Image (cartoon, rainbow, N blue to C red):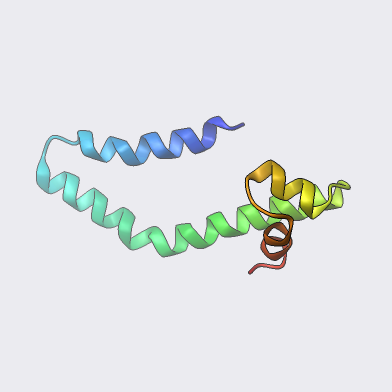
Length: 81
């Protein structure tokens, strides 16, 4: 499942490969306009994943360690902060 994040990165990098500079700028601008909504969606996906892991019995310290942050931060993520 980790491939999904790589696919998103590759899709963003594919913008650089658009040969027509106007089309490249237009598509990049479109993505930038949508970014605030996409950013919020990513935060929700992460929050729901942390909540699900916690409901499965993992502590926030364990979750934090596994996602590369602290247990305190994992708890904050679960609370939507």
